[in-house]
Structure formats: structure tokens, C-alpha cells
Length: 318
Length: 163
Image (cartoon, rainbow over all chains, first blue to last red; front, side, top):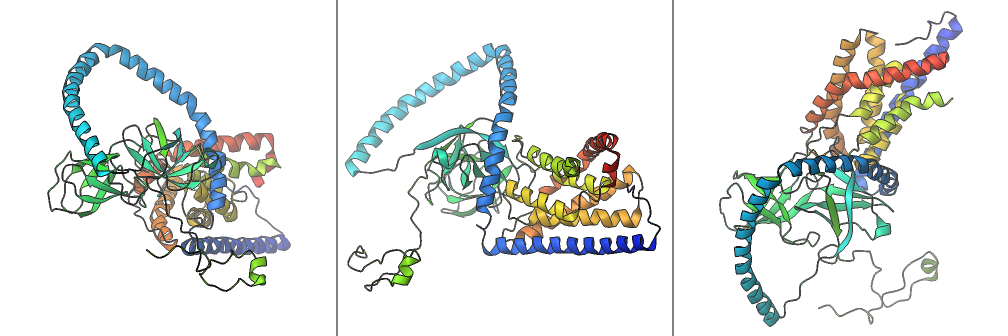
């Protein structure tokens, strides 16, 4: 829909031609700049993390405010529905309660034995610790990357690589952290790999995201046992980020070449999620200066070199 | 003066709208931002130059957590394609536009894979075809909305339509 009248004078025509040439050159330059940015991202994936965190800092609080009334309306609708189904639901729950009580009695005995045994063996276990409880504020539902945003950030003690856990199971882990926002890598993202075990058989493996509602169980190790539909998949605690025993999902298609897992929790279901401290302390991988017995030159020290690590101060190897 | 920024601002608003936490596990949210960019590239070619689209795409990369440059490059290329198509074919009515945009969106979905691989994060793009379907379905809505904005602003400022 071009309303610009056709130019008549020769100077105007020349100007139009020049403008068209310039705009074509600018367009080509812009596309070339995009490709260069991609190469930069390939060489150094952390390039834009600061800008990215600033952008989510603006958007995540916005969405956490916007979604509040929508959540309220949804809850009201759910309350009305609950009222009508109350009696049948109560009967059903009572039956379930009787069954659960019987199993609880059996489990209590087992738990006491387990505690005694652990005390005898002097087992020390790391503890799970909740850092923050919040809702998912925003999510990327229209992109190849499957991430969500939380409206809590480094001001609330969030750091990278913290597990994010919903009421029914694992949601993901924190990826980038701003001051008041954090980006969560959801289990369904193609980059996500969660160390899991099959609860029934004890096989270890990786739950791999693929930008679909289901996950793929890959790299299975352990006894060659066939899975069945309904096998529960829980985290194994390997790698130290996710605590062990958190439900990940249920096998729905036990194919030998790649069992398909349905997620235990809908990551964007609207419930609360907790951000926990990483299961094991993440090792400090900051580069440290070389070990040597000579003093650091003055020139290096004025440029911010760390103090020398002397051989006498180093902890003995093993 | 602020009217010159309206196409870019509406596209960015659509970008933020795309971050709604929908309880779906498929990438099925229509690509509203790219469609807004395409509409404005048709209605106001001067105000949606490739470099403007590039900036909006870079913002999309930041918000979606993708390597910076994937959406930026593709938005700029999409705008250029719309310009070329406008010069080659002229105006053919809304059905032709719909088909053209469907082709551009398909190209976007298919080119995302190689560009992500170039940035060192290869991924499968087949799930993005869901987004392609919803986007093609949502196109008339986006066109109506942007055309309404265009009419409103052109009525209050007749010179706006010339860029």
C-alpha cells in the first residue's frame, strides 16, 4: 500500500534511485551484522547475558502483576466446580485414605529401621533447602527455546543452577539470574538433560527435552530390563543440581530405542514453584593463579593479579 | 513525531504479549511479533525498515533466551523479503498477502534451525510447525488490529501514511 506519488522530475528520480541503493546496502549490512552476532554467540555464549538479565528484569515483574487477576478468576471457577462434586469426591477420598493409612503403618516400621541403620553407619546426607517460593511469571511458548521467568532474582538469593520444583514434580533449573528475575530452563527445552532413574528397575538415564510435551529417556545404563507404560521416573541426584527422588514423569511409550516420558507436572500450570539450593555444593571453578614460589611482579599486581599461591600454603595433594 | 515509532512499539508490545505463561507444552503461541513486523512492512514500508526489524528481533532474542542474532537476522530478512515482494508483485488483495505471509513464516521456522546451529545450539525445528499453524490462523486478526491503528493515526495526522 504505497501512497507515495510517482516522482516526475529527473532529480527526484535520481534521489529515489540513490535512496533505494542506500536502503539495499543497509539491509545487507544489517543481515551480515546478525550473522556476525550469531558467530560471536557461538564462540562465547555468555556474551549477552548481562543485557538478557536486564531485559527479563523488566518483563518478569510486569507479567507477575498482570497474571494475578487471571489466576484469581481461575481459582473462583475451580471453587464453584468443587462445590458441586463434593460428595462423590469425599467418598473417593475416604477410600483412598483407608488404603493410605494401611500403607503408612507398614512404612513407619520400615522408616524406623532405616533410621537405626543409618545411625549405625554414621551416614551424613545433604539437606534440601528452599531459597524462594514463587509463581512462574512468564514463559516462551513461541520459540525454539523453552524457558520460563520467575519474578525473583539475586536479591532473593537466587543463583545459577538451582533446581525449580513444583508441587507434583520437577520443573527445571535456573539459567540466568537478574536482580529481580530469573530465567528457568524447563525440562522440555532441547538443551535440558536431567539425570534420572527408573524407580522400578533402578536403571539410570537422562531425561532429554525436545520442545514437545513429552521427554525422551536416553543413555539408559544398568540391567537390560524392558520398561512398561506407567513406570515412574524420578531424579537420581547425579550431577549435584537436582535432589534425588523428585518425580520427573511417567513412561507412556516404552519403546526400546527411546522410551517417551510424560511430565509429572505441567511446568506452566500456574501453581507455586519452589527454588531450592543446588543439591550438592557446586565446585568452585574460578581460574586461580599458578602455584609458584616467586613473588608476583609489581606490574602484574597493579593490574589486579591475584596474590601468589605459594607452594607452602597449598593443601597437600590427597 | 511519536507516530513514527508506533509500528516498532506495537511490535514490541506483541513481543511482551507472547511471553504470556500459557499452560501448553508445545511451542504453539503464534509469532505475533514477527507478524506485526510483516504487517507494518506492508502498510508502512518506510517505518519498518530492515534495521528496525533487526532491533526488534534482537529484543526478541533477549526475551526468549535464544542466542542474540537468530531472530534479529530472520526479522531483517523477512522485512527485506516483504519489500521485494511488494516491488515485484504490487498489491493483490488480502488472500495473496495471506499466502505470502504463510510462506515467509514457513521460511522463518525452517531457517531457525540452521541459524541456531550456527550459534552453536542445534535444535529440532519440527515442533515450530505448530507455531506456524497457529500463526497462519492468527494472521487476519493481527492485520485487522494493525490496520485499525493505521486508520486511526492516518485520520489524525494525514502525513503519517507517507512515512
